[in-house]
Image (cartoon, rainbow, N blue to C red; front, side, top):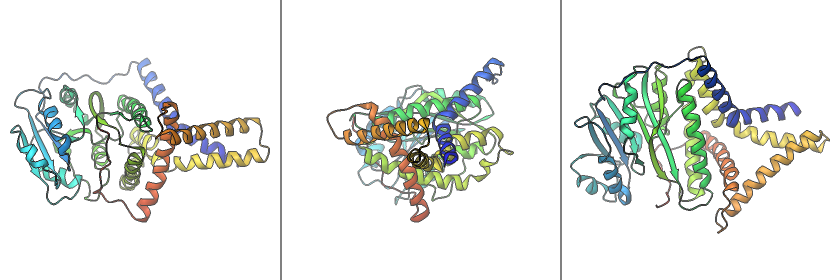
Length: 388
């Protein structure tokens, strides 16, 4: 029982804290050894097409289009495509008001992946950028992304996802999570390659685009990892960011997380070659540490660590086991307080972090169960977002 406790505790701590410490140390060692990546001066920016997918986003679409056409990039090298995935709220009429934007209809609605494939038939630029209709990019996002393509070892570039919260409830934990995740992505990218990207802002060389199967749930993750399978790097660029409002409630965020978890299991089963450290030495280490553990065994390790700790203490396991149990109880009590306070006028953000952490791990377990029982439809009902 003690071995079970320590193994489960080690896996949990390594997954969420230890891996970050390891790559931080590795980066410090590389810096001390003065190992630097070659610098490629950007002489000429590549031609670029920006694809925005939308399904019933009329309420925010005009603001998104204005944000898009005001992005900085060399004249004559940038095209915009907005693809409406079977929208029924007049989205096409809004898009048609702007001659700078090309409208592509994906009718009837068949999901984001099919919409992207439809839009890609109209792309002949060197680089393609994918973004969502409910996100807003900083003015120089495209320039900061495109400069990396001067390096021939770079196959894709991902931007940073930023989450704003206007409600102050448990979704505040979502913003904290993305700040931590962004730090890990930055270190991953500096060490070798980022491990996956979000669809809010992802770019890749047009020649590398290979559509995943039609039933793919995490299209953004599969597209970005398909680049790393070719031994090319996925660079993370924090100075190109996509901002969106957090989920309207923790319930909406939970719905989204369960879908992502189901898609995570699907991705792992389809990217088995990335688990081979002989073929992908550094990438395999990063992929397993940063993604696979989170999406598979670590949530179950949390449960095992608590149960094993409780059984050890009840059988007079020692003072240090009692301290460990008290710490676990305090953490889960804080999460429960976050759950109770999520709809109360009292807002203590300290409680929302453990609450979001527990909710996130519950979503993984629920997503695994969903995937292996009923499956996860690639075309799904989008989560409701907060309003700025």
